Structure formats: C-alpha cells, structure tokens
Amino acid sequence: MSTATAIKNGQANLNGADNTIHHLVWQIRNARKEWAIIFDGVSDEDGEKRFGRINSLGWFMAHLAWHEMMNLGAFTGEMMFPQLHELAGKGNPATTPKLSEVRALWEQITEAVDEYLVTLTVDDLLGEVNYFGWVYPENLGSVLQRTNNHYFFHMGEAFAVRQLLDHTGFPEVMADEGAMDYYPER
Image 1 (spheres, one colour):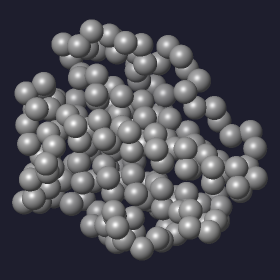
Image 2 (cartoon, rainbow, N blue to C red):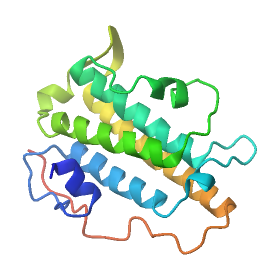
Image 3 (cartoon, helix red, strand yellow):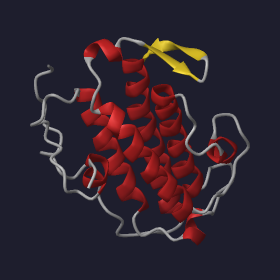
C-alpha cells in the first residue's frame, strides 16, 4: 500500500514522527484526509446537485483533483487526466460531474503526486514551478501552501452544500487533535 493510500485509509502516522518529510507535505496530507471525510456517504445523485451559483460536490472534488493534477504536472511535465481541465479547471463554466468518478481520479492523482511530495527538500520548495512551459510567479513551497489553503477553502463550501442537502450526522473533521502535532522543521 502506498503512503498516500495509507493516509486516506487512516492507516498512516500523521503525527510528524517522520520528520524527514517537510511539514508542508504533512499539512497537505492532513488536508486531504479531512477532505475525503467530507464526501464519505454522499451519493452520486447528491454529488451532482447545485444550489444557485454554488458548485456541486462533484465539481469540488473534480476541482481539487485538477489542482493536484497541476501540481503533479509541475513535477512530471505530464497532465494525468486532461479531461479534468474542462470539468473543473480554473475559470471554466460550472459542471456537475459524477462524484464517484471524480473521487476515483482524485485518489489516483493524489497517490501519484505524493510520490514526489515525500522527496522534497527545502531547496526544492524554494525552487521555481514550471506548469507545462509557464513559470509560476511563486516558488514551489508557496504553491504547496496555496494547495493546502485551497482544500480548506473548499471544505467550508462542501460542508455548506451538505447542509443544503439536509445531510445530518456527517463525520466531524479536525476531530483527531493529536493527528498533526507540531514537530521541529528539518
């Protein structure tokens, strides 16, 4: 089982004991874990519903899959699932993709990107980001911090949609207070 799969399944140690992995990577892993919890138990039918201009849960999942795919592209120079750009890329019209399908893509992408994240050094994080020939104006560390923040921004929206769907008893996120203990940076 890969590290990314273990994290998503709650089988990995997220308490920072392995301080060879940069703290930004631990933060993203935690954000992903919390992100996955929000979608547990949501049907494809509910995942496609929109309320006014608010995006669907399927779109939120596709959008974060797209965001992670762009990060992976910066590492590999390849776009793993180009259809995600049309489904939920920045600035494109709203869509209502099937939640189970885009969640499967998100899981594949995050597993692939995690293989690169665990190797990052401080020097790597200070380096430039090249998205398919376009050099991003921020360094890689800033991009990863933005990724982390992006998860939490859309988590709030996803919870609001679940409330509008009259979902009750959905899992509590951020409940495991010891999951992200601070550890000294390397």
